[in-house]
Amino acid sequence: MSVEATETLTERGARGESSAPASLPGDAGVAGRVESRVGADAWRGLGGGKRVVQLTAPDNGMTITYSVHDLAHCLGLAGFRKIKMGKRGVTRKAARVMHAVGLLRNMMRLPGYALFVQTHAMSVGQLFPACHFFEVIPYAWDCWPNRYGLWETFLKRLRVKLAFISARDSVEEMQRRLPGVKFVWLPEAVEPGKCLPDKPLAERGIDVVAMGRRHADHHAAVIQALTGAGRSYRYEKVRWREGVFPPGREDYAKGLGDTKVMISFPASVTHPEWAGKVATATLRYFECMASRVLLLGQAPQELVDLLGYNPVVEADMRDPAGQLLDILSHIETYQPLVDKNYRRVLEVGTWEYRVKKVCGVLKECGYTY
Image 1 (cartoon, rainbow, N blue to C red):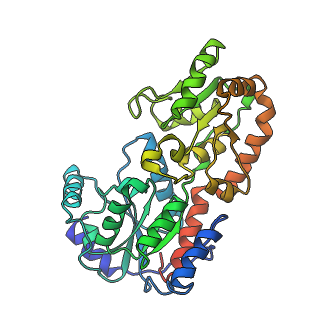
Image 2: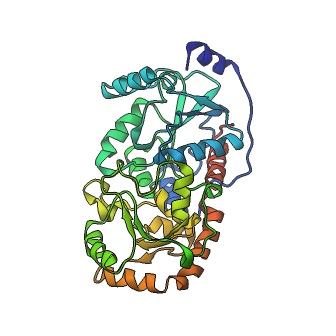
Image 3: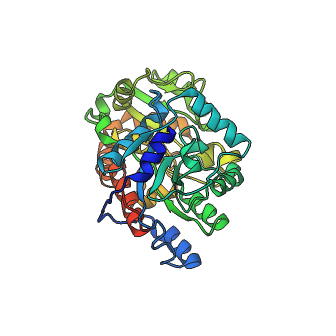
């Protein structure tokens, strides 16, 4: 953002209204615990009538960023003005350097505006230089226990008053660490219009897929059995470098739409060394439900609470290969489950639904958009 753009931003004014609720299914527990500590009315008027606009990053075409831009699009449809940041490599590099040496921080809060910024995994490229002059409202997934201390410092430097986090357990921990900040649980979600769910399970050509993080023991137990039975099994041999599906969003959607079973475990199971006990519903669960793919593995409790039931076929770790081959032998019997998951994700698992919560929280706290 240029200095001229920054000055122009402070001069503009507008109001936004929303009748959206500020809660989700599964919210009551964490919200109640937070309010018991700080008081239910502590956050009223927090925004002081500021208009919230969103800072957006350039689309680099990577599969892992599709969801970032889907959320930005839905926010735009709800009336949030977009300001593109970090388009120049030198600006992004400057932001990373300043963050590393502790100089990326909020120095003042010019009146009129607050900035909604997606800072997943503590990404900072789009923050500079706007964060120095305006209030920042971050939204983050990948807020894991091994970096809680870094997140605490990061949020303190930005002088954050309101933040959205995708993992419910992390919301509770960050609220404990920073009681003067309002933390809100905002799970990840999916844009169902980008998925291809129509092909029945029995007609799909890819038997089993494991994307991203793998459960090492489960993978070792099924790989030979699937190969020996003539079943297809796709997985990333080198993470981030060798994709399961061809690059490009259309090919990605086609691949998921032709998959029967997705193996999916929370990070608390696959990588407890950095995830600890935080079991969160990542994008993969929602993508699979929106693509009518059968989920096999383990469901995070927050996903069960959000949906009202368990959408995942729980893995049998006593006989993973036998269970998987049995499922594939009569995959058509799981069609009612994937149909149910599809209907439910349309109700509570879309970015449109998440944006309604964002709008409700902002209005409740005294912001406009």
